[in-house]
Image 1 (cartoon, rainbow, N blue to C red):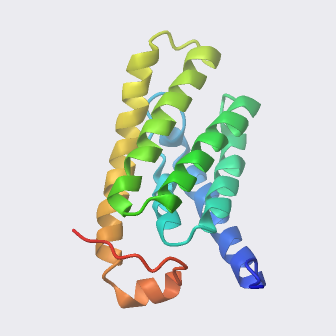
Image 2: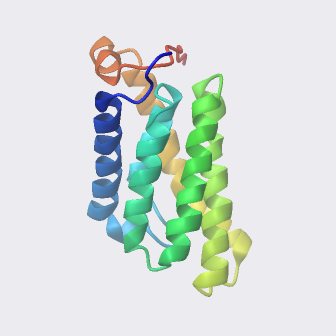
Image 3: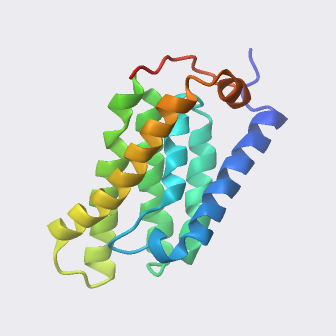
Length: 168
């Protein structure tokens, strides 16, 4: 039986969680709310190559959502949205197929949180705003992944468990 969770995997996931948290902390003014550009969401696409990073990304999101004005509800529902998005990216057969999941899941979930908890009256408009912000980050991350996937040093450092090709 192969040992899945090694000390190295745990440490790498801790680093991913820390990076997610710090990116949200640095970008606090634009990482929360109806119009948000959560730069840390770029890490979600790494789950395409490293399914174990679902844990690090989710933990990082949970820690980042401690700072949310929506409190425990965002810690629960926002983190669940990131968990679902990361899993969907991880099981996607091609990276481009995984790209819409973080955009759509976060748009609907975060807009729902804002509608029910932050007195935002227009749910669908909120979906649009959140989706546009998430879309900008994820599409930028996709382009970055296309470039980095061709870099042998990056891929060696990433140590992908799923050696899947990414094409333009």
